[in-house]
Image (tube, rainbow, N blue to C red):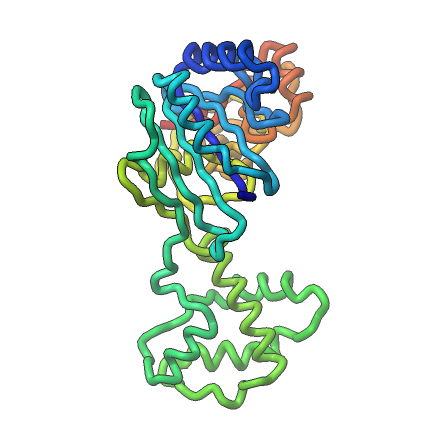
Length: 334
């Protein structure tokens, strides 16, 4: 079967190191032979991301970034469970013949067990609840429902419209009467706009705008199944992996600030998961710190995220700069 997979192994640094040595010594062609046994930096390798700090343990993630034969993945997970029962294992798979490309099957093995078959489930997109599409809204209104509204901030929408309307197919002024009609709580008849080019374009832009406002890819993910961890845990485990955006916030975000970073200079490389580069920069500055673009002798901390730059890492090590992960950063601001 052709499809995609994401495999996470979680354990102590020693447990993962022992597993890698055991597997690679026994099979030089092992899928794990791209990993160094020492602690990694989060840099992406041929097969994955290297050993990364994860909560009070470490994790090792491998994934394919294009369709491949995944029919043997379940057998491999079972075999890993027998070789290293002390490891926690989670496998996400998605077959390409699915009608829904947002749905993943979950196989999960808690640490200390050997068989994931009793803890399986699915990862899927939740419904948008009250967030309706343009077409759904018109259908409900035409049936006399005057309670529903579309959540459209005119100022934000105009900015989005101008960026979206790259080839100037329509002016904002041409679409504005449609927006006025949509905002009229008593209006149920939109026949004057039916089958007009402006209406078709407005539907396209509004649907894309609403999807973006409700998170990348629309609704956030949810998880269900016997013994499957909470969605926040799964999102954190596979943070910043290719091809999936969970739309779930799981990092601590301070609401009040002090001057704990006063006099400290940070450099950020890569994308700190969940915070993002811009979000981390804002937090640092709110705590009195300074963010620079290049590592120097005046740098106190290099914050690394997914796809961290090798040159900045090498420079930081050369200068003795403290290199911190997103987990370290979260602890510093908690």
